[in-house]
Image (tube, rainbow, N blue to C red; front, side, top):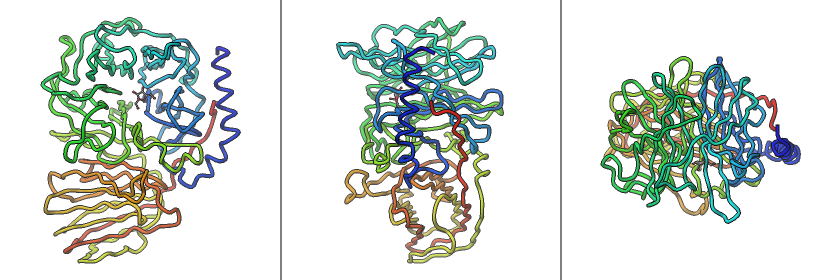
Length: 493
Ligand code: FRU
């Protein structure tokens, strides 16, 4: 441990000692989502299943509720419900990462856990430089920094070159990195290595003006390329897309392309971009394959530069959380997202009502209320319009005529306005699985064909969930009270 590293850890410890109580007093603290102990959390990082334990690292700014010099925070779990918050994995302590240990990924090689991350550096003249770095560990808790391992290809800007994702195929290692050309076009660059420390550049595999795409953003962040059930899938978070009908409604987007990766040629032939989530807060998702062969995704329940300072939790010195983990499946034409089955361990009392019929009316359903809960609705008949209102705050409504599902809530910054997110469903609406936490909603539509992830800040004492129908709607509903995650704090610093 260098003295700078020790000093930074000490500062975080003191920050938590000083203000931790205030953070934990916040009634909007989440019951079943990973949050920062204090300060700001953004992207999930370094997701890996190793020796039976899931390591979930995250971008962490402990000293303010804004972005800046990031650390890697660290959670460990073996069941996605009982977690340990471990000592900080990476502090911005070296010349090559002094202004932030930015996002990246993890692999295991010869019994060593290797993290790949971006070292962010701001020079004296204000110029920003980003390096792809490696750190290694044999116990999964203490990391040794190996420094930068990659040089930037010609034609790209060193200020925007980040978020390495590494994987192994046959006997070679591959890495994708998010990049911006000298002409401000977002790209994903592919590299190859036999050693993990020396990398050969293979080319841009996707990006703005690649593979038949027109202009498609000035920077592509957090790429993730993997194989799933016969398809090669590139998940990426492009910046600079303009809103287009119901699409691209957030400040920045996250979605995926499917196709065929040809490593030897440095090419990825792919189809069109599809957004992964339709809610107000979702960005920078990352996936990993667990020891049981499942492809699991975590996202950040937030979007950069999207009214972040209007989240009321900043009054209590914290902001943002990760999504619940979702298992990804391929249904032959698109990705399907399902909450991982372990989340059922949180379930307590259950309530079931079938054949509820509402006609031109708004109703509560006995016992269906409050939070944290998980709801399952199966829609048996829906003739015109159906809506669910959550705590007199957010509302989810479906119109049969145009098959549009809409989530609305008060605008985060200007509460006198309402904001909307929409999607057109291909085959109508037939099921909803909704995870409601103290201040978040995750809505899985039609068994995971679409998802809406959003923060909500309703009146804390309002438990009401109300159902409205124009024409007649018939549905069944099941509700579980959720006991939430158990989190043990081993070391915050
Ligand atoms: C995405 C991102 C990444 C970067 C990290 C910095 O939200 O901007 O590109 O590595 O956050 O915290």
